Image (cartoon, rainbow, N blue to C red; front, side, top):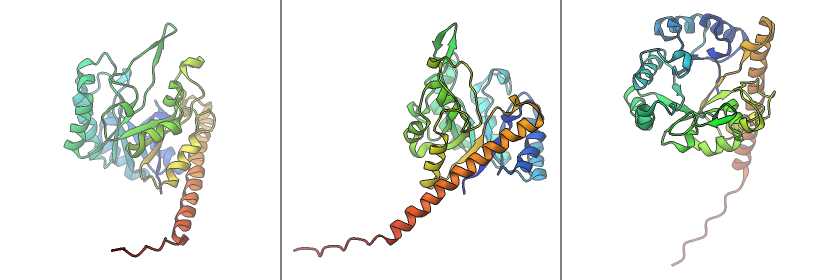
Length: 288
């Protein structure tokens, strides 16, 4: 069964404990924790206590990669990734999610692929590089990430697919999932409704089904092929009005995932049953 967890970004800046409590009450399988300026997001003992209290295993840790976290764990980006991996091991997470470098992080960008692989091997943790998107500044597209915002163009071993980022890029998420192949190990479950070229400027992180990306098709495809990665809901529930609106967004996201994963699993069962009942071709006797 593919686990569906909740990212703490969904309710940010609410306290981490709120995210763990809501994940438990709604029925999620675990948590993804984004490292932020909140010291508690970097405290393994505190995170483990929340995990135990709410019976929510920590599935993944998201490295501090945003402008608001640029000084978390200092200025050295390799050290930031190493500390994220160390935290992930301390809370028994199975993966670390990281964005490609900004292009102005020249030294980090030049060595990014080596740093990711070296950190993964040193800490024995999966590091899944996330697909990103171009930026628009003064109505012009800006290549903000290097070596590439597309992890399929990088020499990395594991990748994260974010549907909202794919939408903003103008990329079909099913095509991207196929391009990632066996390196696709993590999903940020959300949706988007258009690209920069279509006038969109915001990374929407909509509830799946409220946008235009083929989210259902990707989930069904992954379940049908017996994918063994993990999913973290990353929807902007914080933008919904009132507690009821936020809870509904998170519940709808989980229901959407469970529905389409179940469809994929049923198709997989049919495929396996059909394969088991198909007679094998008789082998021809060897000729001398």
